[in-house]
Image 1 (spheres, rainbow, N blue to C red):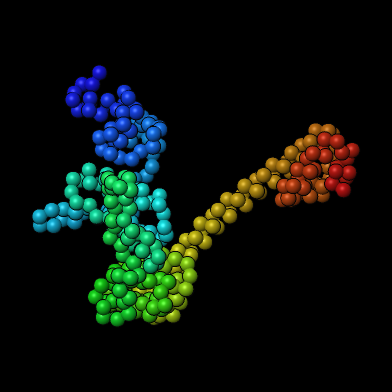
Image 2 (image 1 turned 60 degrees about the vertical axis):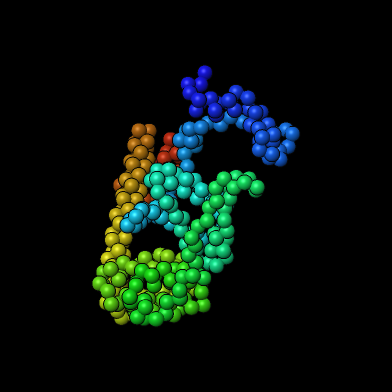
Length: 308
């Protein structure tokens, strides 16, 4: 039995699953087909199959009179599944933090930005329970920054411009301007931001241009990048050498064991083995050859027959 009025007001629809369609038709004048299947679902959403509820970046803006949660999502293509997740993210954030929530979507192409701006409705065509309207940043509203002074004044904005306009005809000028602007800040920070920029450009013309700039410019941070690259290369080489050494050691040990087994079988059968034949077996590093000898050692008439 329900424990309160609150419980009764919703559990009644569990007891008679056809009640809801009737109420919608008769009391709310909602057009529904005569036959509607109604299924009782698990109300504890945390018991459903776990789905990561991670937004790309989550920021809290502290204003004088309120706080705003900003969920920032990067979107490189259309995805109806992602839109459904946005609805869930926003509802969860609004409930958890009990303040205003904004969804900001960054897009590298005009087509994706146009799609992301379309309102997403949750509910019925004639009655929207929730409407999702992201603030979208894309090639149409992120400026093309090719002025050195403007780029130097806000490096991170210049990087955003480069990433958003990576497929734009202006990307060559944007990247050239950015590479020059980076020389005016701390060398290590500039090198780090240069790597960040490279990782954000994707594959294609923009990446090729940036890599060319990073190999031809003489700015201090470029030298820092080259030094870092050489150090990382040496570290990778040492790691590969260790792995290669381990693999060679394992192979050598396996061959040594196979050779010993071949000789033990021959000696166990009382077959004479010359020093030359023993040397031939123990010096062999071909595990395939050794395995073949081991299989035939049990039936060979002599060491000469086995080793040919």
